[in-house]
Each structure stands twice: as C-alpha cells, then as structure tokens.
Image 1: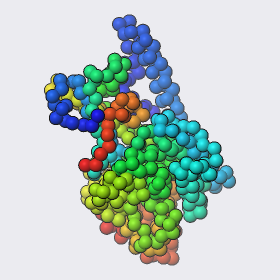
Image 2: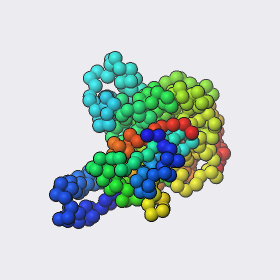
Image 3: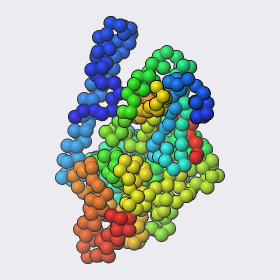
Length: 109
Length: 343
C-alpha cells in the first residue's frame, strides 16, 4: 500500500487517510528516510474503520510524546481531508492499530 | 499528574457508555476502556514517582553489590513484549540472541569499569532485551523498562543488533532515565538523544580499542543495508560531521541552527559534535577522560528534566575542572569544543 498522492486526489474526500511513520532510532521523516502509505476507510471492516475514526476524532492532538517513557519509538501521523480542509492527528506506535502500522512502507528519499 | 496521551477523555467515554443509543457491545467496551485507562494512569504515575524518588535516593547511595542479569526474549516477529524467554542466550545458535547478550553484558561491564556504575539504575537492575520484534522492523527502542530490536527490512537496514553502538544507544536511554531524566522534547530531548549517541559511540570504540583518531565517529554504520549503501549512505549520523551527505539523517552542528520544536534526533547533532570536538582535543581514548566528564555531567546531578544545552555544557566545564584539577588543558579543550558549536 505504498503512498500515491495522485491516486488519493481522485478518491472522495473523507475516505482516504494518509499515514506517515515518524521517528525511531533512525529518525524517519527527517533526512533521507521516509515511511508512508494510505488507508481507504471504505475498504475496511466496520470494526477497524470505527477504531480508526475514533483516532481521527481527536485530530490535532499530539501523541504521548515527551510524557511517554518510550525512547526511539515510532509515531504515526494520520492526515485526511475534511470539509475541504487538511486535518491530521499524531499517535504513538502503541496506540496505532495493526492496520495503520501495516499500511506504511519504508523507503529512501 | 494528568496524562496527556489519551485520545478520548474519560468523560466522553462515560457519556457514551451510558448512552442507550449506543449498542450494548460498544458501551461495555467503553466501560472497559475507562477502567484500563484509569489503571494505566495509576501505574504510569506510580512509576514516574518511583523513578524520581529512587533517582534522588540513589544519587546519595553507594552502589549495591547485586550484579545485573542479562535476559533475552524472542518476539518471533510478533509485536507482543517481552516475547518468549530464551534459555542460555550466551550459547544460543541464534546469532541475534547471542550477539545481543554479548553486547549488553559488555555494556554493563563498560559502565562498571569506567564509571563505577552498577547497571542502568546504579542498583544492579537486570537488563532485558527482546529481539526479532515485528516484521521487517526498521527500529530499536527503549520502552522505559527494556530494549527491543527489529531485524530490519534487509534493504535500508539489517538486523539492528549488528550495531554495538545501537545496543549501547538504547541502553543509555535507560541510563538517562535513571539519572538526569531529560524530557524527550526541545533542548533536553536533543541532550537525551546525544547521551545515547555519545555512550553508544564510546562503547563501540572501546570494543574496538580505538583511539579518538582511529574512530570513525559514525552512528549506525553496522546496520546500513545494501539498498542504503548502494545509494551512497554509510551511516545514520556522523558525530564528526553531523551535516554530511553520507548520513541518512543529517543534523545541525551549531547551536545557531537550533529551532524550537526541532526533534530530538535532529538537534542532538549539536551536543554530539561538541563531544567529538572535546574528545579529539583531549586525545587518547574517548571513554577515559572525555567520557568521564560527560558521565559526571549526566549522572552526577539530581534529576534535571528540562536542562538546556548551555547548562549541560557548563556542567561539563565544571566536571572537567573537578575531575582533572591539575590538567587545565582538559578544561580548556572542553570549553573550546562547546564554544565551537555556539555554546
């Protein structure tokens, strides 16, 4: 499920969630390391879709971040379009459903 | 102490749990979520309080004699920690297990021999490591209690346990947790990451018995996979040249480049470069004089979660004078190193 933003643009708004994996020991999201993908909520089983929608409902809120004891842990940024605006939420890996974790692919930029 | 890492506040969950329009199954799940959240918060707060108080007590106590036991667990490519315990890891046929046991044991010796520290907490705590975490997992991390290592995807990265500096890096996150407790954001976040790179690099140099001039000062050299190598990358970070193009994650090297909000793995390039410069000016083996100065600045003070880079630099200046009062050139070397990175 490698990211393809041209495809994302053709999908109806509010159905497609872009996912970026950030941080870790290597520092994904900075330098030459990228990890990203996407999920089409309409293609998910009801239970999984609702679990992800619950995450999206807290848009803008940072993950555990500085208060978490985890060091070098991954974070996931979920971004989507809603009412013509870009929205995003960031979560720690421990809060990321398996579907979100599995959606990204690591690559060199 | 409140927890800032929740997505749905308890009051919202409670309202939904009592809403007859919500299906019964979902309401029950919400009630369980509230109970788990509350318990997790209690555990988290108790852990933080315990670490803080034990850090203060340990600061004034002589190290106890208990030796740390190194324990290995195999996640078998799953995501559940700690995984299955591994019996006799020192003689395992699994090279990842054997290597992790060896480097972790060596790191405990390194702390004891040169810094007179009994394990990460100074009290001989056991060292737990989980290997083969996840599928093609390009990461290693410290979760507050133990180390976890992925096997890499075989393209960008190979098995993270191949890097003794990686293992030293993750273990040092534990050391920092039990000493200065640097918060993982802002300048203190950069210091937290830098301590791990500094001690990881020194550990690698000690394992190779290298002087500062023989060392390559690269972080993550031994875990670079064939795909990254084919693109010209030789490491994750370069302490000598943080902005180098051969690093997968180039960093700033001067404090004038620091921007509030910069991530810990980015701004750590500044104190990393200061340590490299100090060690090179002092000469010899990094873990001896420069390492002892940095260790004193990290572990010789009570918990200081929000320490700035400038204050940490001043700690090392003070430590250089205290540890080597008859060798003023060492204090001068440390002072110049920090001045050169703008601190």
